[in-house]
Image (tube, rainbow, N blue to C red; front, side):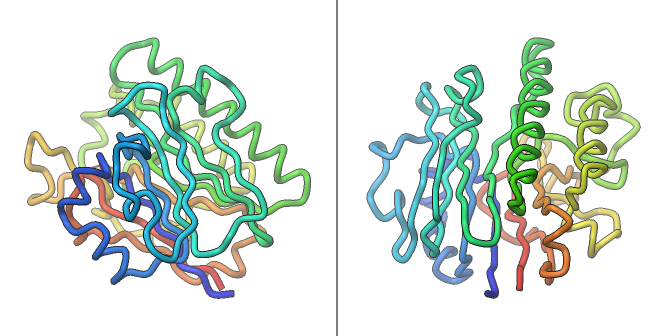
Length: 255
């Protein structure tokens, strides 16, 4: 089965809807589309945005309106779905949609941002640790894993324009990057870097500094696949020319 999966932090689905989002979906035709930072409850949006034509839709909404939130749109009906990691502290922020298919279990995740305070950094690291435990539990049951979304961390120096200047900034702290190292060591492949080792490939640019025009960016958005899926991984891509958010979409194709 040939499948195209795309992940995009839309920075507000109602905002991006006004910028041609549904036309983009129709033109791009992803088999599965994972959105982060939807910033909306389903009751706040029209039906065609809640479930675009031809897609099953699954939303994880935060307890607080206008904040966080993820949604997965899939042409294929999942075997099972669940929302969250089973921990109220994390799940109240609406950060995870899990969809299980015959060939893999897909985690669409908006990982926390740790910049606001030491407490938020601790929260982010605790989320990271619990997340890795859960996907390992599922993989140990014999299931292939894909996880995607805004990880809110650039993994290596190549993944941001100014690594030296950001060594003490959440999003490029050694402790955050070490967690990504651990995921790789445990057999999860950064799909984009599997194909493309070149610099200046980013998925987020700061609005305030108009950084996108100069391509001063960070690669914060990823697709990781468990190594057993590698033989079916055809390509990985960053759609840096797609506008509408401070992030751009990223994706993979599976055979």
